[in-house]
Image (cartoon, rainbow, N blue to C red; front, side, top):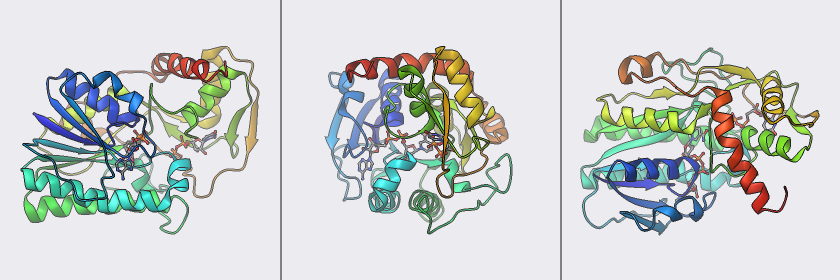
Length: 314
Ligand code: NAD
Ligand code: UDP
């Protein structure tokens, strides 16, 4: 197959490119590097891999056949989408429209990287795919949440109106090598603080919960979803729920760090709880995560360590 990956030089996109190349496919990666890094895919340049520095909110033209479009372009960390609010809205709306248009023109299968953020600050717990969410459209996170909700609506409209072969994956907090140490997300933040012996910055009282999925498990789930004949959204995430305070203590334990925990204000609209109900993924895809949080963090920490060394901070 020949696949187009938008956002392919980002964290998740680059792991998907790796997997597609390993499975024997040709990959065309489109990324404007707003939050991505060409180093994430530089090792693929001598393979059946093409990279274009391109903003996918513009018209997409790809020469030759395309069998699969994976639309992963979008700033994804709260700091990134708050720094780039208009770009986030544009890539979720215009970018999704262009990526769907490309898939339609080529008769390709399409998958949208959606998010647990479509559930907002959820009033249902754990979150099933049938839950419609509790999103503040005009809050700072609204630029991301509403863009992804629009992207889901657009994807379903292309499926229903044009018969496009679409998938929607609702990704819950995923971590692993190639996350930027300073992207502001809790995993790189706590891991780098612990490695540097700096204070661990817990927002609020740390009682808010998240569930963390290791990137290889997510990629397996996405490949299984692509192979399944299922068009409604599917949650992919590790249902082990933990508070941010528990997570801070876990990282201190694993690293043996002497960092203290400090508390600061919780960001506006920060969801109080989040946990996927993965019964659809289990039943339809036969998928469930295989990597425990402890195991996954141990596989990820060396990457942060190496990055901090390269930056001369360790
Ligand atoms: P990332 O920032 O590492 O990757 C996003 C990539 O998209 C970057 O390389 C960026 O340069 C590129 N991009 C952004 N706007 C673009 C545009 N207009 N044109 C071309 N490229 C553009 O983030 P990530 O964590 O890898 O997230 C990838 C996708 O997965 C996003 O769509 C995100 O919403 C979704 N997602 C991620 C998570 C997670 O936990 N990592 C959770 C839910 C959803
Ligand atoms: N968080 C924290 N300290 C940090 C960064 C994040 O306590 O230095 C909290 C944040 O308030 C949220 C959780 O960790 O409750 C997860 O944040 P992240 O930015 O990783 O992703 P989110 O799930 O909020 O999109």
